[in-house]
Image (cartoon, rainbow, N blue to C red; front, side):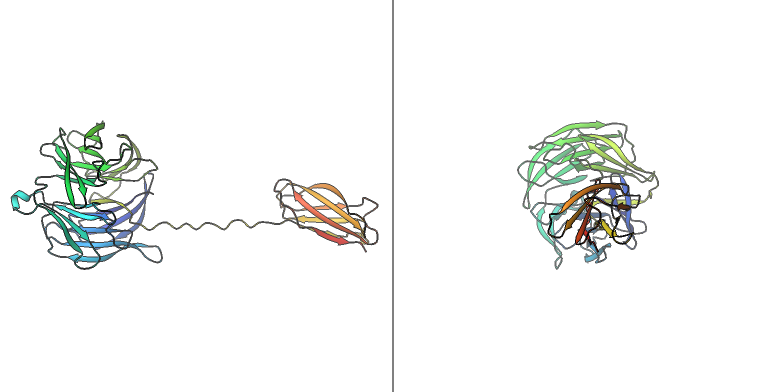
Length: 414
């Protein structure tokens, strides 16, 4: 299943949804009135009805909005408002969807400026479709100060979900594993450039754990790492010569490959490039040079209704037919007029006659159908002539190519 893409432009509150397929995109819908103040947009399955849910958050005002992506009865995609909470809590620097428990996802918030504000730094929330809509599941008062990237994923063999915290100021990070709402330290990692600006999760090695891509725009390098069962990172590939202006790198399924694909977006150049990955190597599968220069968020997920394809009805089965007639009156000959056979095929004609209580006798002839599948064949005698009193004829035609057979047709002698 290919990922859809959701584009959001903060300057005028415009959003567009696209379907993707092997590096190509087709627009599903263009929407306006989304507001121009959302600093974070997160998508996930939080247990509410719909294709997925969208969480909009304004770090300045603290407003948070929950919407469900839905499909109308006529198979048109859109969004319905679940709840908007104004002045909820400003200042969160990181908002991610996590899967700490089976079933519905949760929201994980972190405030990297915790030391400056003296506030609790990270919190886990459940999302519901009724009051209180957001309910605190766990507070982590001593986590995440100064963190620059918070990435959800699986980074150990013990639990299926966890988090990676990355600190760009010294190029180090920490892996945590999640047991329900409890986070346990797994391992630390380091020696990455302090100029890394994006950390992208995905399946880049085919392993069980989440792999990571570290993008360094200053060095123009993309570092692909796998993560083993103990939270130890191993270099897969260091791709050099990358552009230095990628504002967004979006993981998703944009090709028919088995590993995570990537969309690179540059605001300055208005360029979008799709790549498939193979154990840290990348190969371009799509290039667009005319995109807007102002997209603030690009998300991959399920945002468009499934395409309903109407299959044409199967072709009607043509049953050949043969009509018997007596062109000379008195049945001195039989005229066989056939139709419904395959064009230009050879037709085998089985002519059977029976005289009163005598055993039936048969003879086989062949003829050629014309371009329309029809033929005219005249039989002028065999077995003692065409007709004697009380004789009855039965004819069946069989196409040699189509193997279609006409229903038996009979005619009696005068």
